[in-house]
Amino acid sequence: RKEVEQDPGPFNVPEGATVAFNCTYSNSASQSFFWYRQDCRKEPKLLMSVYSSGNEDGRFTAQLNRASQYISLLIRDSKLSDSATYLCVVNMGTGGFKTIFGAGTRLFVKA
Amino acid sequence: DGGITQSPKYLFRKEGQNVTLSCEQNLNHDAMYWYRQDPGQGLRLIYYSQIVNDFQKGDIAEGYSVSREKKESFPLTVTSAQKNPTAFYLCASSRRTGGDYGYTFGSGTRLTVV
Image (cartoon, rainbow over all chains, first blue to last red; front, side, top):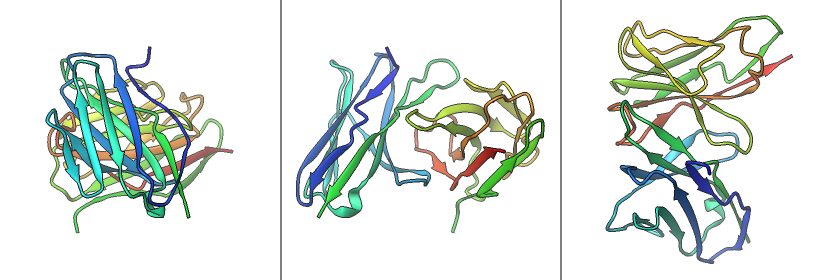
């Protein structure tokens, strides 16, 4: 089992739709969680951190479920500009450090 | 504006050749990293450095070397021992090791073996 797993997609949704991605992680001792966005052939950029209480940033909502070991990202009112690959990132924090990047979920928003 | 600068953007390497990828940051971050990205895979850690003159191997260090002589600079050399070097290479930095405050990435170098 991979340490961090994401559905690779692609997710094809119309503008204005709500779309959700999940990401599962294997290490229950994982300490911090993030979503990054990566545009085609560009570098990843931090989208948002994920907190146990859940957090929201405009149209984006991130949640953490420690019991089931997954994090989620919800995008409301999708825009064409949301088309990208969304990377789940988990810091395992075991001796030294260990950050694991998921392979990403591709999203295409259509007009 | 603060950020990370990687150069070159594209690099072509002949078989048996060593090449060096440049990474410079002006964010005053202590920690710097090199990642490799292949299609359909997550980023994999090559090397990281927490302070000047110190660096640690990541998961796929074989065939690569680094130096950290200055806080701002963390160049990566891809040696001829790296048998499959064609990939997208990303340099990153963070305030502290481990990325708990998030990573800032450079724009990447695409390396192709010709």
